[in-house]
Length: 258
Image 1 (cartoon, rainbow, N blue to C red):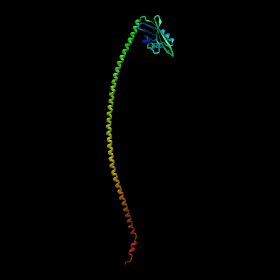
Image 2: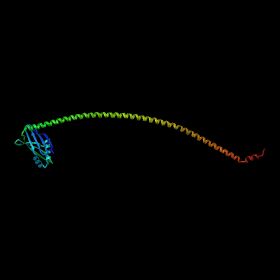
Image 3: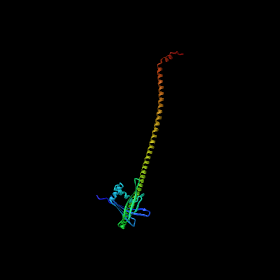
């Protein structure tokens, strides 16, 4: 299994208002290399696996954690950290930075030696910066073009959405208009049926009243007939009684004539 590809960083490190340097880092899994230039002179620092392991053990850290933390502070200038690039004698420099751990301010230092080929080291750093700038420019152009394409697609989608919205409103308006037409027609038919039923009800009520009057007349006639019948019966009874009285006429016949 091959080792992972190294990572590269390049930091414009502002030491003070009058001093700034460029620090290019190449980061491996167990060691790292630093290339530094101020534009006139160059320095290098090759942190071997043994040195990194020794430093990590002094800070009670795994090697990978030590390298990740060093990359964090030398890949990007961290606010709140005090950076230094001081003389260490015989042309050497000491690169340092501070950080806080568990409330304690700590400082890491690495000694850098003058580059054996200062011009080449500076040129390599500039080439890296130029290549990185070109990559960033290409990425910006690519993202810009992608954004423009997405913008065009978004405008198309917006236009289509507005069109669909209009068509939906037109469709709903047409459906509602047809529905209202059908509803009004049904209402008209219902009114006609109601009026028709109302007229039929009135026509049925009139014969019923006539029948009631006819019934009253019939009852009156029947009552009169009953009275007449009662009179006849009384008369008949009277007739029957006179026939049964023989003495009346016998006395009349027995009177003496004058």
